[in-house]
Amino acid sequence: MPEVQPTRMELIKLRRRIRMAQRGHALLKMKRDGLIMEFRQLLEETKEAVNKMIQKYAEAQKKLAIAAAVDGTVAMRSIALASCQKPPEFVIMKKNIMGVVVPVIKRKPFKKKISERGYGILSTSVRIDEAVEAYEDVVDAVLEVAEMETTLRKLLEEIERTKRRVNALEYRVIPRMKEMAKFIAFKLEEMDRENIIRLKKLKGKKAKA
Amino acid sequence: MFSGTKTAYAYIVARTRVMKSRLLKPEDYKKMLNMSFDEIVRFLEETEYKKEIDAVAYKYTGPRLLDYALYANLAKTYRKIYQVSFGEVKDLIGEYFARWDLWNIINIIRGKMANVNPEIIEETLVPAGQFSEAELKSMLTKEMGEIVKSLEHTPYYNVLSKIGSIPMYKIEDELYKAYYSKLLKISAERIETKLFLNFIKMEIDIKNVKTLLRLKESGESTEEIIDCIIPGGYELTEDEIRKLASLSYEELLKSLEDYWFSKALEKFESLSEAEVNFDRLWIETIAKRASNYPLSILPVLQYIVLKKVEVDDLRILGWGKWFNFSNEEIEKQMVII
Image 1: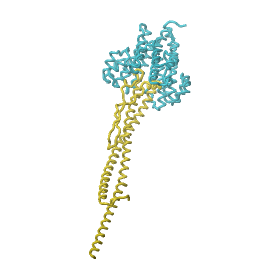
Image 2 (image 1 turned 135 degrees about the vertical axis):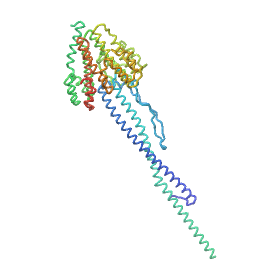
Image 3 (image 1 turned 90 degrees about the vertical axis):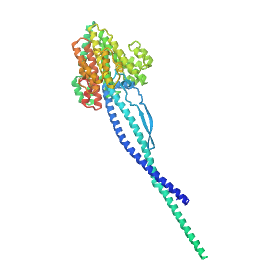
Image 4 (image 1 turned 120 degrees about the vertical axis):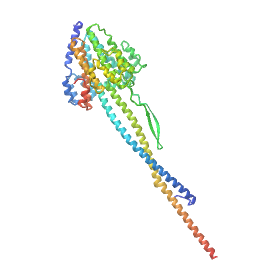
């Protein structure tokens, strides 16, 4: 038991702190439960988005294989040189979910018109368009999944942190404070009893005299 | 040894007829459809493609081996046709093959603009046109300005000199327009050249209708569509294309029913299927016209187109087998079956 002054004032303060800790504990528990609910909901959405992304990737790979088959590696290489790597444009904003700051990727759809893709129309076939379009879909899906996964990771970290706080309050801080309050109360009662006995003894001496 | 236009046509037609007899037959494709990728390569090693497959086998494997071998064989065949022809027909074939020069120039410029290693650019070259392999390789070592300057004597110089001021894809399309515009300047006074010109015009129709459908489906504006159209078609004039481009996609399909290529649009589920239909119709049309004019440039052009289709079909077959596509999927993409 740490050094503590067994005074009534200290007991009042301690009881106040216990009430506050209990209120904090209830709030943190609610936050934890809320975060878990949010996480579960987002997890389902992310699973769906990841599955869609995998599907889109498989589709894009097939379309690329068809384009390579019809137009040849030579043409594909040539077109890859033409549509030279313009990265997708996006801005990362912030959103607050129960005090957790998560990223929101504001992006324009990566899908472009044929005339914006950077390769000539007359030297390419529609299979190339189909393959490029399929990969543009994949880029959009990857960005969506990236946003969701980062949010999930941040939520998970916050859930862990909140869980640790709830546990610390529930199993360590509040019981210790309660123990201290009990100790002070016991000490105060003991002091009261001592005083009564002391008063009784004084009263007895006074009567004898 | 030989003289006169008729002799020149008779000679080259006889040569290409022999070459045509060596093309793979539809039953060969049927046989290959039931083979694995390795079996197809082994089968091709017993045909005209053996030399090219052996030549690139040390460097590539899988479908890329087939790809480069097929392009090498195509370039060799086209060069041979050009070399054995003479007189007017040689000039016409040379003009027709200039499309491969364009292909190579575009690839070199794209590569240079993207700072790609010259070795990688070299892999994309198909020396089947007027420029020899050595000339193309020497271009690879030059700077962009020098490359453009070295093409000063060609009809592409005016377009190439705009590099940097307009986007590259516009340059590419303009180059193809310059190529066709040069072909269309050939005098059509005599029946021999008139047949050639009509062939080119019909090819332009096919290219234009494919472009029209592609861009319309993608939602491009009428002006953007017109920008990509090659002037001088057989039935599709610029004015008609302008009218067609302003229609909705469904109306466009309906309006195309009155043209010579309408048969290709009778039944299709996707644009890629429509493209295959156009290619099939094109082969049928050339075959019909070539049999009507057996001693003209048409049988030669028919062989040139058939050889390209053969190479394309073999590539589709090879890649399709490599990626485990079903036979139906492969057949859907092939032109000769």
